[in-house]
Length: 405
Image (cartoon, rainbow, N blue to C red; front, side, top):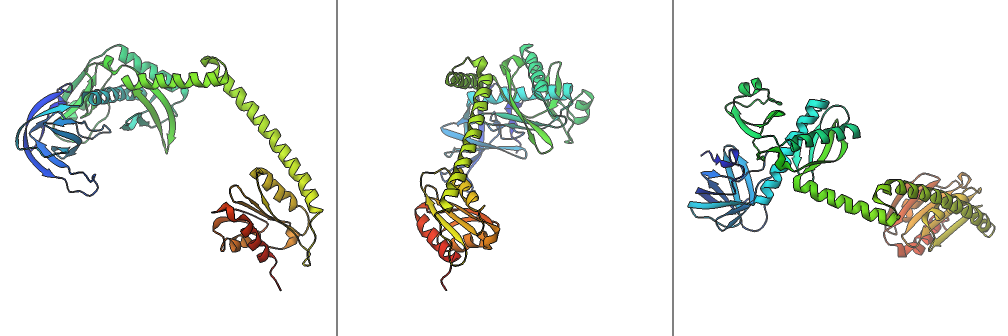
C-alpha cells in the first residue's frame, strides 16, 4: 500500500495521527544488537533518508523512531519497541526537521546561484551532521566566485522570497523552466523559489527564504573532476561563525595581536620558524660532520679492511643521527650501523668501497629482532618494534656484517 506523505504539502507539521498497518521485528544483522521493529503507516509526516537529506526522528506513540526508510511507494519506520495495530500519534523531532529544512532550502538557493551566474551545475548534494556539501562541475570556484555566490545567495535569503511546492509531469515542469530535468514518469513534485528557480525535489523545505537564516560558505576543494563546496545554513551557520571567531580570537591572543592582524602575525611567526629551522638544521649538519671526523679517528680498521661504527644513541635528534651516519659513510671502507634508543629508528650507511649491502643486512638482522625497514645497497632505514632491543639488534647486525671464520 502506498504511504501518504504528509510532508510533501505540510513540512511544518510537527504532529500527526495515522493507522498502523503492520509491525514486524527487524532481523537484518547489520543493524544494532538492540531489538528494533519495522512499522508501516497509512500516512506519515516522517521524512525518509533520500536525495542527500537524512531521515527525521521522533516518536510513534511510546516508541522512538530511529530510522525512516524509503522503499518504493512505502515509508518504513524503524522503532525501538513494537506498536499495536490501529491508531497512533506521531511526533517529529522539530529541531532536527527545521535544521534539515534550512540546509536543504539553502542548498537549492546556492546551487541555483552557482548554476545561473557561474555555469557551475550541482552534481550531488550531501546534508551532513555538521557541514553540508554540493559538488559542482566546471571552472574552479575561486575565492572571488565563492564570495560572489555567497553574497548573491544571501541576497535571496534577505529578500524573503516564497518557497512553493508545484506538481506536474516532466514535460509540464520542463515547459515551466525547471532547472534540472528528470526521466521519471507520472506526476512529479518540484520546489519553486520565487524569481529564482524551479527544481524537482522530494525533500522538506522552509516556506520562505528568510527562514534559511543565512548561508555560510566554508571552503572549496577538488574532488576528482568536480569541486566540493562546503556550506552551512541558519543555526548551523551562526554556530560555526561563532566558533570560527572564537578560534581566531584565541589564535590572536597567542600571537599577541588583534584578530584582524592574525594572518599577518601568523605569516611572520611561520617565516621566523622556518628561518630558525633552517639555521638549526645547518648547525646539526655541521655538528654531525665534526663529530663524525673525530669519531673516525678512534675507530680501528678491522682485518677485513673495514671500519665499522655500531652505536646506540640516546637523547639525540633523529636528524643528527641520520647526518652522523651519512658523514661516516663519506670515508672509504666505512660502515655505519646506528640506532636511536628512544624510538628504535635504524640508520645503516656505507661507503661504496665497503662493498656490503645495507638493505640485505637490515633485512637479515630484522629476522631476529622484530621491526621493519628497507633501502638500497648503500643506505637503509628502519624501526624496531621494541626500542629497548637496540643494543641486541646492533650486535646481531655487526655479527652478520663480520661473520666469524
